[in-house]
Amino acid sequence: MRLTTMTDYSLRLLMYVGQHPDRLCTISEIAQAYGISEAHLMKVTHQLGLHGWIETVRGKGGGMRLARAPAEINVGEVVRSIEPDFNLVECFSTGNTCVLTNRCELTTLLGGAIEAFMSHLGAHTLADLLPRRQTCVVMPPASRRARASLP
Image 1 (cartoon, rainbow, N blue to C red):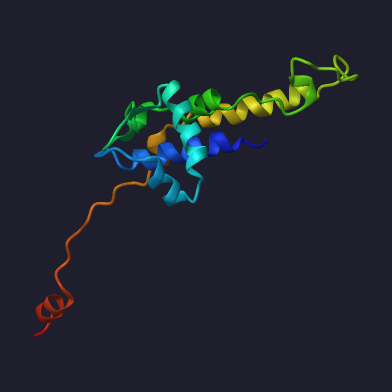
Image 2 (cartoon, rainbow, N blue to C red; image 1 turned 180 degrees about the vertical axis):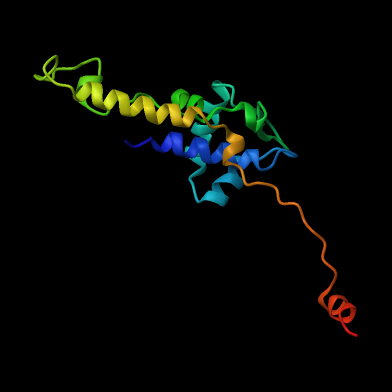
């Protein structure tokens, strides 16, 4: 199975914006960070905004931010909202003309695989995809540690 580029870029954009909750992010900075076309990201931004995953602010000083907390953005729901379909084989499509229809278990097998895949994605949120914030432990400089251990 392969997700579309639109879904790939959507998840990348959400992860980038999720890592910068304190400010608005711009299409140009995300494009530069990931080496992605700004034209593609404009389409992605539009779709994510339509589905309510991000909020956009127009004009000078504008940009985008998450519309919800990362823990409230389900990865499976994002994928379902962006992917046009999950037609892995002809028999999944509405224009099915496969001569094996009703005589083959491929639909059942692949349908189960798709459901398992989506169930796994649905068990995760954007928060699971973001780097964990590290807490810093302040250590004394090496010279002080060395002096403290001298007799």
